[in-house]
Image 1 (cartoon, helix red, strand yellow):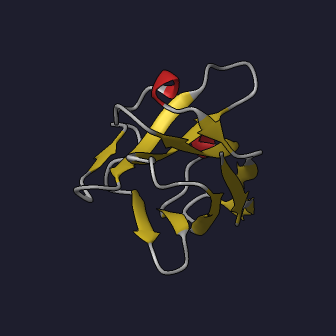
Image 2 (tube, helix red, strand yellow):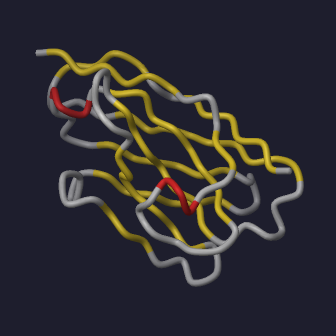
Amino acid sequence: QVQLVESGGGSVQTGGTLRLSCVVSGNSYRTTCMGWFRQAPGKEREGVAILSTFTGSTTYADSVKGRFTISQDNAKKTLYLQINSLKLEDTAMYYCAAGQYYCRLRGTDFSNWGQGTQVTVSE
């Protein structure tokens, strides 16, 4: 079982930056993909960024390309999401996820989820 704990969320103004962290623990040797998802009130969950733990390749949602960067530090067993140029529409609960098979921006590909960290953007 894989445990994921997110941190780094907060309240920022538009144009600001945040770095979200996700500490991975437990039996993660089967994990092939790590990702960040978000869900705003009244909206469906949205895949934001994913990273293949085998190849290091990354994929981003069109809405965040050029502003978000996903990365990992294997020594620290931590996944990051650097968020720049924050927009009002980035306000959401952000979740870290781990998957063992496919690696796509689909929540159904991921079987392990953290509790989330809230990002709130204001003018």
